[in-house]
Length: 453
Image (cartoon, rainbow, N blue to C red; front, side, top):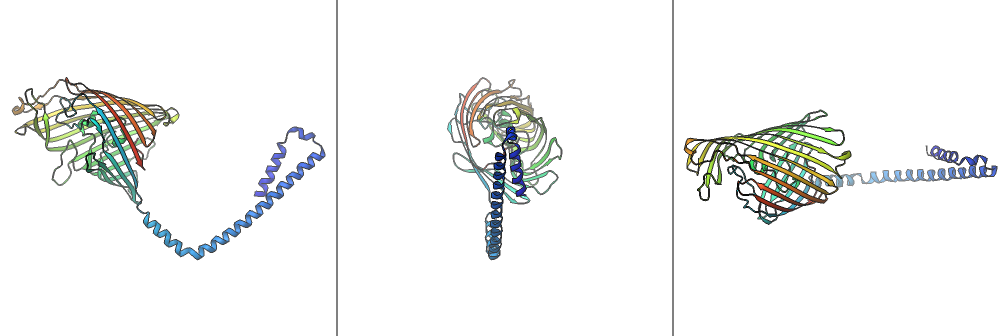
């Protein structure tokens, strides 16, 4: 084979010689023939030497293998045992500087009974996130995410096991996890496109709905992306409340469908439903009626049901997201709660209300490493149906739509670091506009898995 290759190369070189060589003298032709013969002899000699060296090396290797087969096997076995658990470990470091014109403890008008994570003022370390993940065996994979609070203490954000052995597109998860509802709920804080979550998540889920329970997802075997999922959980996360009881305290259903449009565009839409129950869920500082100095503390017990829609569309010229891309996303949720409201922890009567929230945002990477984005949030506090005993205590119709507009600019020297500037005009408290400025850094140390679409 080698001989034919080199002979062919010599012939090709001869044929490619300029046409003027046709008129060359017999001496020139003889010189060319001699050069070809010399090349053939040189390469044939070299090939023979290499073949001899190969045979000697194979014979030596076979001898060594027979002499050391048992020791090598023992070493390999020990190494395999030591490396059987080799987790990927990552640490996310983040911090912000916040300048606010209003106290962050003041809730949005009409949403005092919902969550209000707020923003710390001044310099703030923020939570550091320690992530550990590894394959346990061919059937299971484990993931743990620990949040290290700035003031000390550790909380468990995620600690779950996934089973990959079910097949047929099924994925089973059990433990503590972020629910699969909506679009942003499963995204960890360091991967958010803005410093904070949209008001949808801040008000309805206290930034993110975390659950202790089980989750089952099914990915359809189709060209179009189709995902269906369901969860049964303890119901510990807001708007539910942790209860000492058997069985489940919450349930989630969700569905997503998406596809590509050529190589430049892709989209996904989804729908979600969450049900839970609250028991004596206390809200402090509720500014019910004028003249209530310092507010009051109310307690709600009843059912909470939230349904929502989400979508995302992405575009990258020529499919290259490293240079430029556009992402547009939005979500809408409606929550209905009904049960007993105990006003100022004293007077109990019926209470029901339907509230809705939505946001729309767009992020543009206009050049490598640089992005900018805008976001608009709006809340609808609804009109509450209040029982007769509390009709004179609780405001049923605020007649005000809280909103917020946000702009951000960030720079990422690499996939492991990000610096961000964010400005917001917060009109969520009636008569108390809040101009907000944030500076943020996010640094990633170690291995970290890819994020969802």
